[in-house]
Image 1 (cartoon, helix red, strand yellow):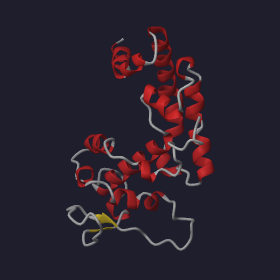
Image 2 (image 1 turned 180 degrees about the vertical axis):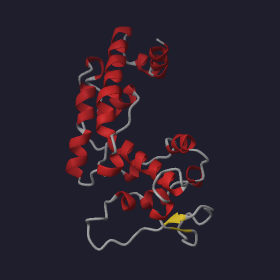
Image 3 (image 1 turned 45 degrees about the vertical axis):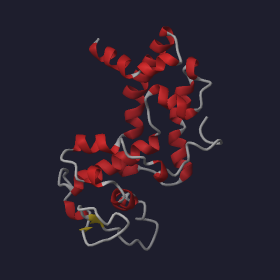
Image 4 (image 1 turned 120 degrees about the vertical axis):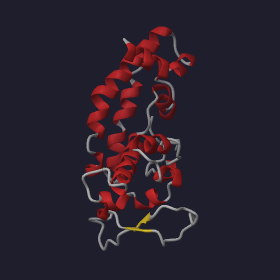
Length: 197
């Protein structure tokens, strides 16, 4: 019961759109999605994360389809439905998962040795005041390894604010990462009028 009350408090902004009955329906769909569907779509995404736009779209289309099934918010655009449901686009969640994994490897908090991510603090870019080391982008002759986990988010990780990279714990990193706008990194533009429906 405590969990349901916590979820209701988390989804209080939904009351603007819906009646109490539809709020319960939204809560039930939210629970179904976050318990059964979401974990399947996000399991081990650091290993299998797609880089072709057609695959990104085919995975992302699960979420709009699921949120359209809620009759009280069917007419809302995709991003507004996500806001009502307190969800993020799946591609953004995969990028945040990758960046969190980079943070764990960078700070020796995972089973992977930190030398998998070669670092250099002499690299100077527009973040020249940053005290943390930068991860060196490996050179890839072919596209085979260019979208590998150790290559695909290096520039994104190097572009993060120092407050995120220098976090003390993984939970603090995730909290600070949620405050960073990563929309420029997304391959699919959710704000596009021809985007998800």
